[in-house]
Structure formats: structure tokens, C-alpha cells
Image (cartoon, rainbow, N blue to C red; front, side, top):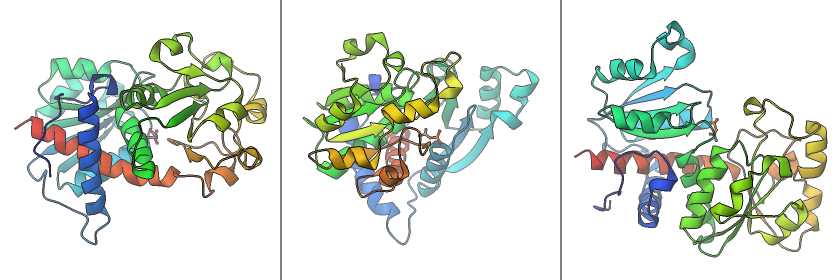
Length: 310
Ligand code: CP
């Protein structure tokens, strides 16, 4: 395992990472990917580390993936779900976390609906913080696993053409992916309803292609996002039926393109809305490979951040 260190003590966002940090995470993840594909999938690396997973928002993939990554590294793990905790009785975030830390916890993995909550914690408590998604701000480990999956699939990212499609406006996954892809030298476009594309997109070095078919024809990889109805308090398009008619990726569209495209999706998938089943389950799709890579990438992040504590 490499002796190199990350430039950061916490993982709050991809914005804070250097290109060198990202490749250090990728190379470490590559080694952990071999570990988790062995008959004995565990290493004793974090045997003396206790990690608390604090989820203030729903999650399937991220929560299970972090928990598995922690267990594969032999860490002690405790899980906290806001819905069944004393947060419901009015306790502040800081009080909740300080009580957890009093039980001698070293690292906190946190998902929270408020952008900035992990950064606030990192400035106010003495533990390593890993952002597992904060509102519409960032979801750094999702972008790392998405970018690792592209790197692993093609052998490089520099010069690759990636289109991110769908609800860009409400997506922390899109935001973290923009930062990672641009740092690694990819060309990035977005596509989707104009009402769901933020006005500042060009300032991030990202181009817009409103014609979905043209965007698909241009790209090597399409990363398709779901519509985040839970974050929309006004209507950005008439109905899900019309959304799927104009922006849903279908087998028929993929078959009409000149080249074969790689299809990604961070999940959860809404089949028949942004993606047809014949696309999600096709040979073009690396969606489940992304999920597998997520465990290795999160093992790498936890291992490298734990090294920063020594
Ligand atoms: N991709 C993702 O963050 O999924 P979950 O919401 O299930 O964790």
C-alpha cells in the first residue's frame, strides 16, 4: 500500500482535492478491489478505529457501501438514523455528534439535507469527517466511484467525453462529478430540460447540449440522473410521462447512434422515467460495476483519511 498522503484531513468535497489526491484514491481503491474479490475479503487495517455512520437522509447504496467498506477494513462500526434518534426530541447536530464522540469515535461518515453541515462539523469537532452527501452541495464518494469506474473501464479519463443527463439543478452527484471530471481532464457536457440546468453551469467549464440525441452521439459515457422530486417545490416540467418521452434514454435511441456508449447511473433508478429497463440492464450499462467499485473506493478514502490521523 502506498505511503503517500492525501492533502486533506476530511473529505468534504471534490473541490478540495488535488488531481494527485484523486489518483492516490484510485490506485489505493484498485488494490482494495482485489482484496474484496478474494475468498477472504477482509484486512486488519482499521482494527483500532471506530466509525459512526450518521444518516439524516435516506440512503441504500451509500450507507451499505460505507458500512461494508468499514467492516472489510476491520473497523468498529456504529450506525445512527435520524428518524429513530433523539434529534426528533430537539437535540442540535453538534450536541448529537459530541455525545457520539464521547463514546470514543474516531471518524464520522455523515449524510445531511443541509449543504455545509459536514464542513461545519469538521470545523467544530475533533474527528475525521466524511461527507456522504450534503443537500444539493456535494457527494464526493459518489463522484470518486463514478470517475474510478470510467478510469477502470477505459484505462484513462483525460480526453474522454462525458455527458451528465437529467436533473442537474438539484444534483450533488452532478456537482461533485463536474469537479472531479474537470480536474482529471475530461470533456463534460450536460443535457436535460433547460429548467433543470443551472445558469452558472458554463462557469464550471461545462457545456450544455439540450438535444439529448446529439449529446448521446457526442459522448463516450452517459451518466444518467434521476429527477429529484423530493427537492423540487415547484414544477420544472409538465409530467414524468412527458419527461420520459423527451429525455428518457431508450434502447431505440442507443441503437440509432453510430458508436456504442457506456451507460452509468448513480442510483436510485426510476425505470421508465430517465432510463428504460432495456438500457439499465443492457451490455452498455456499468451501473452494478459502479456499486461494486463504491466499496473499494470508500475503503480507500477511509484508509487514507485514517492515515492522516496518525
Ligand atoms: N447514489 C446514492 O447516493 O444512492 P443512495 O441515496 O441510495 O445512497
